[in-house]
Image (tube, rainbow, N blue to C red; front, side):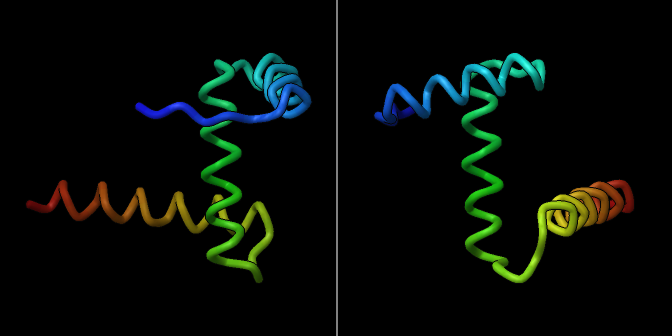
Amino acid sequence: MGIVKISEELHDEIRKSSHVMSRSINSQAEFWIKVGRLSELNPTLNFNELITSELIKVNSSILDSSRE
């Protein structure tokens, strides 16, 4: 596990959002990092399309492993 240095302002925003979303501060930061990375890799997709795409990948992976 690594340490990422962020501004106090961003940490405060993560803390507030983590409370609203019932996530730990680390889980909220990780979620935002993952969504940001997906957004950069798929600039034409909106948030809902990104999440749908990821769910399809996970579900097809689960289906593939159940067939083995």
